[in-house]
Amino acid sequence: MARAKAAPVPAAAAQGYSEARASAGRVLVVGDVMLDRYWFGAVERISPEAPVPVVRIERSEERPGGAANVARNAAALGARTRLLCVVGDDEAGVALERLLSAERVVADMHCDPTISTTVKLRVISRQQQLMRIDFETLPSHEVLAAKLAAFEEALPECDVVILSDYAKGGLAHIERMIAAARAAGRPVLVDPKGEDYRRYHGATLLTPNRSEFRQVAGPWADDEELAGKAQRMRSELGLDALLVTRSEEGMTLFDAGGMHHQPTHAREVYDVSGAGDTVIATIGVMLACGAPLVEAMRVANRAAGIVVGKLGTAVVHPEELAALPQEGS
View 1 (tube, rainbow, N blue to C red):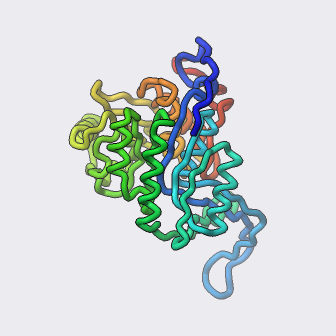
View 2: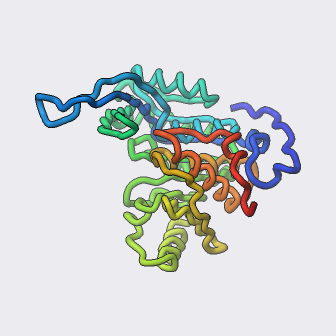
View 3: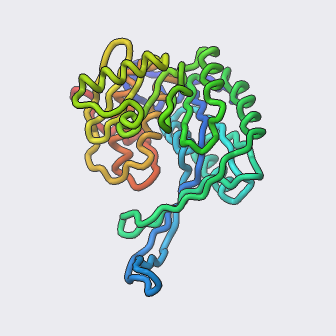
């Protein structure tokens, strides 16, 4: 990914988000991609074959999901964004490539003819999700090894690395990726999955949501106990920082300086799917253009408040962030 000369950032944009500031950043996203399909229709009767609703489909939509949604969020905010992933040799993979190209994401897609591109199909009626159907298989070792080589080649041409783990097999070499990125002096942000976080050792930032963190660290009675668990995990995993996104409670960052909390900015929660993608993408963009982590968290919290007001996997646009009142106003 060639680095174009960035436009100078106005002095007024030295703090907070601006599209001009974001355009100076180069973000590399690696991870599990999927195609999110939405079928919208009306329910007017119950099936005579079984006690289930009959949905008459009226329209459909397709959007990039998983790591692809992270990449499109970073690109929407203005960063030069490259995505490294594995897809199948199928129609869904072609659709993903087309959608990402339209959103200014440079997609380096490694094709594995032995798998099907992950697809999540959601059936929606009257703005309510009735069903989700998943199609997925794990990529082969040979394709993953090739992706690791491409990752190492891409490191010099990025400012920050985002590893988006959806437990679909695309990050089988994540330990080596983290080590290579840190050796190259690049911050590594990880959106984790599963119960074993040891594979993320040495990352710059981990961004579990509240339920994911509780699954690994156990429950807590108050913020003091939460802080103790978070700082202990940060130390054990060799992390620079840990960010726990807490839904209606906002988000809390734990680093060597202590605990930094941001209350939620959501005006109306409509759909939380993909909100974690927006958070990590926004933090990545801010870090890529030189913002401190606490400032990046504040902007990401504002972005999350916008995206949960939208249906399905969505992005936040520069003008939406600009329209929000600034901190302290």
